[in-house]
Amino acid sequence: MSTEPRFDELIHAPTRLSLVSLLAATEWAEFRFVRDSLGLSDSALSKQLTTLEEAGYVEIRKAFVGKRPRTSARLTPQGHGAFAGHVAALQDIVARAGLAVLPDQVGR
Image 1 (spheres, rainbow, N blue to C red):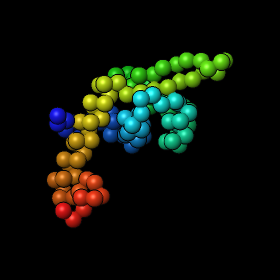
Image 2: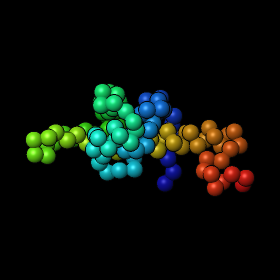
Image 3: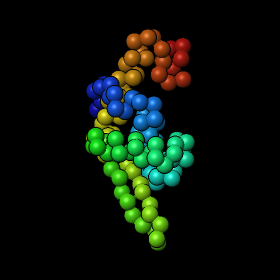
Image 4: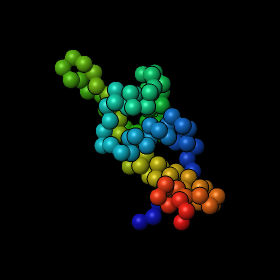
């Protein structure tokens, strides 16, 4: 099954692209893990997650562990599809320049 290339302006912003890439590799990711992995402040990550949630790309889950709140996020099926389409569009752009997308393809 091939993914239709579709450039996504919402995902393309560097912080959101990093965030969506991280979430694409996980089932659920805890807020602290994402924040620390991307080097974002709490408020910056919250803003990006809210933007992606409003677009339908991310699902947020809030729970308590003891008395401590825990927030987790994951990509929705729509988010996975948008990310796959965006990556395919980026691969097409790079391929048109005659460059390899993956390091092991250099010189082919």
